[in-house]
Image (cartoon, rainbow, N blue to C red; front, side, top):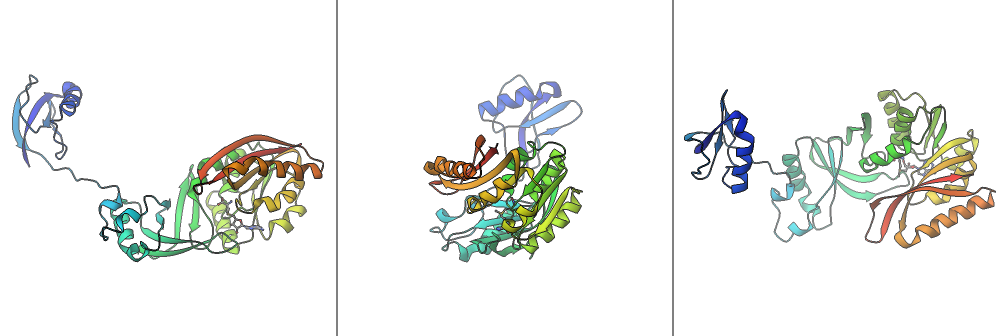
Length: 334
Ligand SMILES: C[S@@+](CC[C@H](N)C(=O)[O-])C[C@H]1O[C@@H](n2cnc3c(N)ncnc32)[C@H](O)[C@@H]1O
């Protein structure tokens, strides 16, 4: 498209470009051109900054829409209910939708794929369905698969969003825990899923062994693949109930407990599995005003076993509902 432009020597181009933006006259719909000597800045009107003005052809910018809500074709009354965010696991977008929005799931899926080139599949998430914390997910757009490869902190995880639990939201948390593990230590991951905590710990902290327990056979199958993908040989997968398996293991320096709705019910087994001075990385979804009560109960359970609890750290990880919060605690037991 033809436009007038300022012809500016290359060395002066950047400050002039900024000045034009400041004055609101740089054309945003056209791509800036340059040759060996000059930069051609397309402008909406003639402006005297001491540089020649020339008319020439410019390529039009492709306008990038990043919010799918600007593209999706739904009735106006549905628009306010459209999900404002979603999780991305590898190339899969996982979207929670209210009942009124669900009939438009395919249109929403297509719009998400149109705005995010890395998304190949969109799944509608209708919530947790079983004690394995797996979710009721249905492909609504794109490739008909629930399997993907997810990368975090240089690690590669094979995930099946329909067969086993996985959340991308704990990546920073996994790092925070992994950094606390010292070479040669023993770790028990009581609710290990497809292995993200265990593998991150194995690759970051060089423990002697990580016992990675889960009672979902599909999670253990994926975990074995992930151990191989990441060459995390110190992770030992164990299929079964943590309550039965943990008492049979050697004593640990760290126990990871990521079962945030029900983990407290396993705290006795975890404390008894720890060496003196060992640390439990405990996750809980709790009412904001019940955090201290929850910690006091754990301290009481420890006292009954002749152990003293010391809170090393408390991390507010994310909001779970208007009143509930997902917390991470590092609790040492002397
Ligand atoms: C919230 S997920 C956490 C998975 C993993 N730690 C992660 O961060 O991706 C909880 C996991 O605990 C497993 N689980 C639940 N109860 C269990 C039990 N009694 N023994 C072993 N695993 C259990 C579920 O199958 C699920 O994979």
